[in-house]
Length: 118
Image 1 (cartoon, one colour):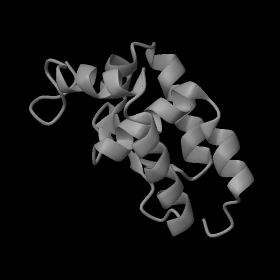
Image 2 (image 1 turned 135 degrees about the horizontal axis):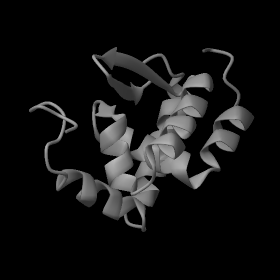
Image 3 (image 1 turned 90 degrees about the vertical axis):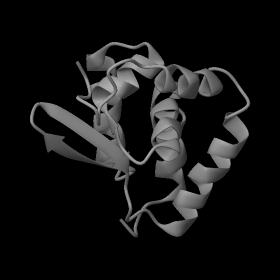
């Protein structure tokens, strides 16, 4: 984890779907794949593939709960990388599609936690 380079971080963030996933995760402690899929309006295979890339880059971690996989920002991220993500979040939140992603997620019916992911 300590060997994460700026080049690897920023090349990973260059994909809009991956950046949208990360910004949703920054704003939430943990999200199920179904929540991210719903918020972004993308198919589950597309989101799962992008999350796998984020996991391979050590930006996120996952855990399984039954048939659901939950993701969160890797708590072992180097401080500089976490600060870069927080700066991206602060700049992106006023722009589309990032601002709408949070609103769509907030309005998702049957969100995980209270019998999440129907």
